[in-house]
Image (spheres, helix red, strand yellow):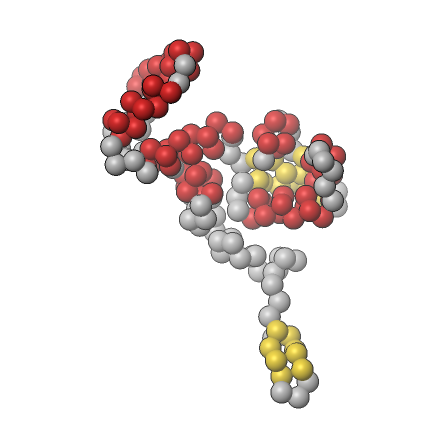
Length: 167
């Protein structure tokens, strides 16, 4: 994901593979990229015989989702905010003040009271079936491969006379 976020453009699997240190096999990188695509973290567009992949969620949105998940795990939001404020430096505190003021002026999601607006990407990461932003992607079937996918698992059944056969 770091390569997709930092590139700013759609990448081929080969582009990603060539930037990794230590070097990884092409098939290993392809497998990871395909998993990220199926889970909704990457989108793809056809480019000749290959695909170009791009991130569907920005790094900032992903991080906000993680922060929302941490807040949602707390039973005392005020204590969590105090503890967080004590751990950040003056520069980060100024950035937080600016972000809070901007959200207040823009009519942010503060009226929900449950941090649900920040949980989408993190909930997806846990395997909730929802895509980035908390929206379910139709036809993905969670962690299962979609119909027609080359990654679809084959089923085999033991036959009494012929050994194993495909179902």
